[in-house]
Amino acid sequence: MEPKYKFTGSKKAVYSSDGTRHTVRRIMALRDIPRHGVKAGDLGGWIEEEGNLGQDGTDAWVADSAIVFDKAKVTMDALVSGYARVYHFAEVCCSATVTERAAVFGVTGEKIGDSDFRSLSCPKITGDAIISGKAKIYGSNKIYGFARVFGNAEVFGNAEIFDFARVFGNARIDGFAKIFENAEVYGNAYVRASSKVHGSARVYGAAEIFGAADVDGGTICDNVILMDKSHVSGDAALRGHVVMGDKASVVENSLVGGNVTMMHSAKISISGDVVGNIRMILGAELDGWGVVNGDFVIRDKVYVESEYSG
Image (cartoon, rainbow, N blue to C red; front, side, top):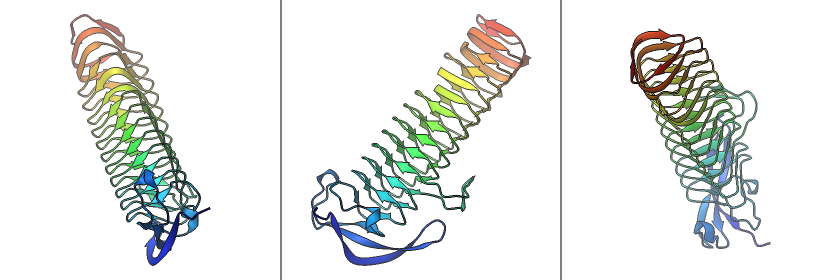
């Protein structure tokens, strides 16, 4: 089989996140790769060894000033370009793209961010996923489908980003969190633990989603906190300093804001606004339509026909 590339003789030293020194060599294409706009004779990026980029008949390529080293692999039709770095045991495959100044790497025992990995863990970028900007992908996560991670976003732990999900801005995804379908997480939002964000959900601002919280649609922003097994769905919107936990739920077209706290399976399914310094406990429920506003505690089921102030 005709080789896909050769080494040019140019070498340089690079360092992984754990300080390990590696020597990478620049490659040159020996055949056209139309998928990536590569012509025979074009200079490619930098790799450490042929194990990083096979000489097989696939279209996988490392371009521009991108660097792939250690035991990382770029396979099938994948592309690593720009100033991207892929290393440790990370894998970029299928039609995935890692570009711009993105970094994809495993973790070999050092502490990075808020996660403390003591054994090797490695990400896998596959499908038609694109990692770009200054995004950092590390840990044992998987990003696939048509997912996009960009900006200064970080994905670590065992998180999964897939379908048409978007993670960007300064967002962080950690633990076993899953972002999928058409969901978007951005701003300074932090989604972690075993939580899920999916449907057409939008999570942004400084919102935090953790525990086993489930956001299936709706908008979560500002300083909202969702934890335990709380649930948000439909076209609901949460903003301000809302706190939900202990199986609390918000559904329908409810807009919940202010300093609302919901615990003990509390539920809001009102088609209207719930704002103020409200605390819902002991299975409290708001239903109906209209506006709930004030400074009080709700312990019962309340049906709102127009306005309720406690």
